[in-house]
Length: 386
Image 1: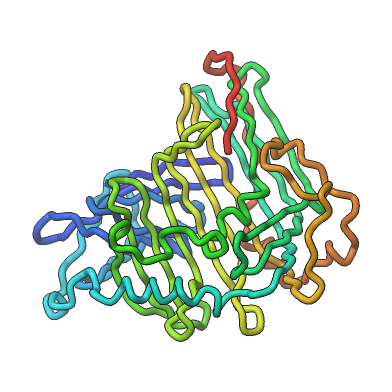
Image 2: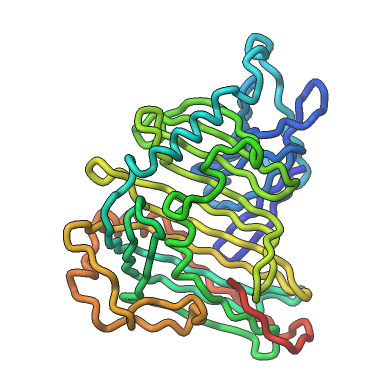
């Protein structure tokens, strides 16, 4: 079943569904489910879930693919839809799980030190932040922020790896029902570097078949680069699933789509679902972070809580890279709406290429500020959202 629901005022849609074999009715684990640049992999039961902007799903529809099956493109999406994939007889001998796929992922992991920046660097860029709380009466809290930030990150080969982020400018708005559940949204700025999966060496990149099942879906062209498309899902039911895009020439991770389910967060709300999109860019002959898109959704005490973050890098500096002043570095325990711009950043720091500004304006969705409900679900305590 594919269920579509409005997830926020930014017109995000949560896509849920199941992929099955059209002839046997059995699940198709590891199938790619994509809408535009967004997507995930079906888990061991053929189920999937991810979020996407409504405009993307309307323009691109949904594409399901897997080795041994005909690719399906769906444009007529309903609230009750099973994705049934037809086997391709002449490809059945290739099996859906390639025996060499773990080698591809493991080789990409081993080559991180060769492929990615081996010097410390600064990145400036644009961040779009949206946090919301809803109940049966409607929106109880909404915060949006268009910010310009500067990061300092240690090289991809350093151990331990370090990172900082500072706020240069922001244009934000916060509205709430004072009687509703108060949720402190924290860590929005640090999401940018904390979800650089390559910098953090996330376990899924290691290609360990004891923890994940990997499936080599196909080869395709991505932004002029030929890549392996590798689907994966964890062995723990509904734990995590996603897609790795690996350069066939250098074995660099070019793009990562990763969805986690049922996360336990110490000192904060447990999360039902977290979806992350990470894209890397080649700067001269080394790769580094280019873009991050993050969305998490959960339900707590009668409230639906959501955070959405988007980041687009604008400039990268290696030659004169330096850590941020201590007073400029944003601490994770400070509420997103309380962070103030640091006055010590220079005009040179804030200078962004015009083509990147145009890209951000085109890619970041138009903000539609919702109306705050007059009534709310009765509750007294406050909680944190990380």
